[in-house]
Amino acid sequence: MTFTVDFKVRDYECDLQGIVNNSVYFNYLEHARHEFLHAHGVDFAQLAKDKINLVVMRSEMDYKQSLLPGDEFYVAVEPQRISRLKFAFKQTLIRKHDEKIMLNALVIGTALNEKGRPFLPAQIDNLFKTDSE
Image (tube, rainbow, N blue to C red; front, side, top):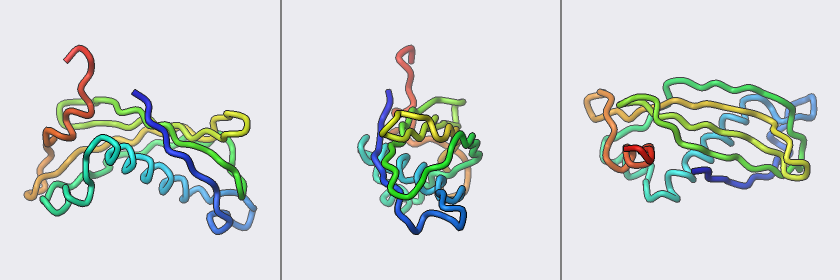
């Protein structure tokens, strides 16, 4: 299942070269993941209050081209199961006017309980079930 979130580059997200600063892409990707969770009934803030912390373990980003001020784009989010305790979000950032891929990313994470041990609560586990499960 693919989920998308729309964005528009704001001037202050650009660096001296006039392109989106590489660190800003992390924010775009994180916001898209949070919107994915919200759309699927998972309240990120409530999880934290319940002492369940979703954490990123690894991020891989392949920059293809740079976004410019005013560019409209979207981030596609595809959840993937990695293992019993790990999940991933395959994310693609696509510029709208030409459907050009600007960035491919894979973000791997897990959930930690209040003792800091990995586990997946049911509401997270269910997001990553495959048709064969």
